[in-house]
Length: 204
Image 1 (tube, one colour):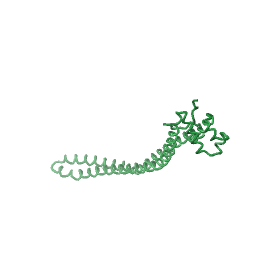
Image 2: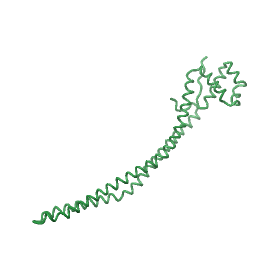
Image 3: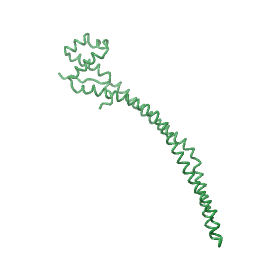
Image 4: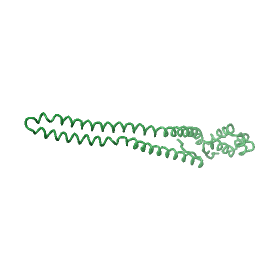
């Protein structure tokens, strides 16, 4: 499958277009990462919340362990402290849930903000590119058979503007009918030039 034209100018434009699309994609991926990082700043309270909960849980469990060492009443006194340790556990869980929720939002926002402009440009590029590829493939099949240049020359007589045809020959129709190899190659090249292709020399 042919992806680039034979004509240097057309091929250069295609390469530049490909590079611009690639640069567009990379730029918006970087924007998406920036958006993700910005949204994740909303999860900043999660870490101190977890740290406070973890510290509270550790201290209350430690106190509860010491209280149980008090003779006779130790087993009854540890209940409030183990309950407070549970609050610390809840704080840690709340911090985890906050970070998870913000991370989900960050992914959604960054993907939407990145995918929308990327898809619009890439789809447009694909339509233009594949349209050219299909047309070039259709015409390119005829490049491998020198006799098909006559058909390309006939297509040029039908499709091209008369002024362009007369630059090649005073009477291009008569030149085609006579089978003039130079005229046929010139007409075929004129038709192929529309997609940046070139005809191969005709085998006599």
